[in-house]
Image (cartoon, rainbow, N blue to C red; front, side):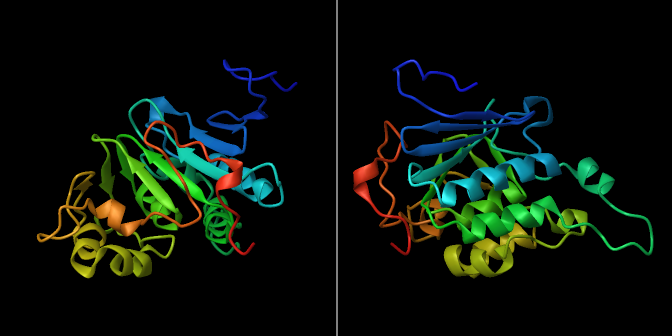
Length: 226
């Protein structure tokens, strides 16, 4: 059953999974991670739910943009490693198609403006997914971390290509290879006062946002390729 609307009486569609809440408000699809007991660590089921929410918005003319956000003072702690290992197969068997890969495919092939609202830690894929977003809003407590080298992992989501291009080789090397964290107010370079994440994910011509609201308005822009 679809709820009648929000506190302001605006109609929306709502889809709730165990740890992902998808809400349609006016022309905006908001995807919220809700797994506070695990710092919003993303399971394969959660990746599948997020991917489905993105895919189903592509041919829905009522959805004009998407927002991905977390909660409880954390964006996401990245992959749930235990859940990821549980998806493994025995020796000699072909590995199943990963829901993480499906999520990255959906994110990369999304044709509508997408915004990330980051509060607290954004670890691993919580940071690399941001380079596929049109615009990123970060709170003062946002902390970006890509500790792949610490775990002997390869960075996902084409981040080893996108991060040097969008935030500079030195910053990308520090994060991806040295495992250093970056705060929301870290400058893009010693000569710049612009936060690195704002330079890395510049404002899209198709995305309009206001400080008081990240809700996208129907008349402001057209989807990519329109």
